[in-house]
Amino acid sequence: MKIKIATKALTALGHETRLTIFRKLVQAGEPGMSAGTLAESLRIPNATLSFHLKELNGAELITARQESRFIFYSANFETMNALLKYLTENCCEGVACTPSEIYCNEERS
Image (cartoon, rainbow, N blue to C red; front, side, top):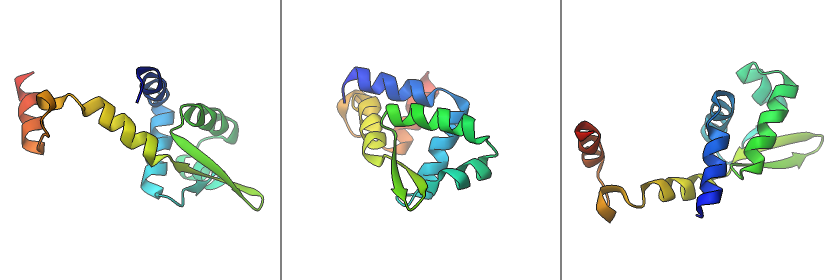
């Protein structure tokens, strides 16, 4: 992943509402959720949801598909995993970290 793509994704996730939407879509898995169901479950007005979905889609963090007259949104797990890999590729000096090592590194900070 290139730094510009990572920056765009992190900027999109840097907003509380967008992070909440993204986490909800991650929980929904591959089937995703319709825009209406998503708006209802998060108690977000449709116009506000649409704005935030556009930002997440622009950062390639979500995908949209039309089924009949409904649009379903899903987390883009490929982008999410690439971002996580990018953020952790130099963790523990390039050696795969175990959860306890990550915790130990946090303790040292």
